[in-house]
Image (cartoon, rainbow, N blue to C red; front, side, top):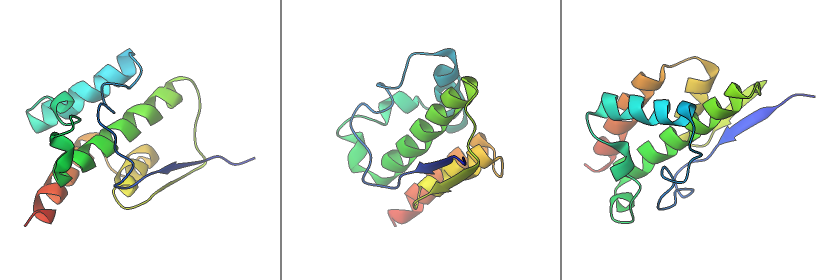
Length: 117
């Protein structure tokens, strides 16, 4: 049997979504890496006010998806296929190994900023 991991697009966000991720070294490493790339704490992005902005929404969805996928991979789960709707395509690309997480974070931050213009 084949396994597909599908990552959602905008609309799946929820306040506190990064704070609600499981407390594990894998998740913390993902949050730390994203914070380092952005030069800001990503935990400030999932508040009610912050999620009114496209940039924060898209970054939260990417970070939560990749952290969750890495957590599953750390438990020896691997997808045969990945797919993503809109912003979820970036998480799928990271999980597939087509794009580094750091590059995806940079691209999604820029994408969110450009969508505001």
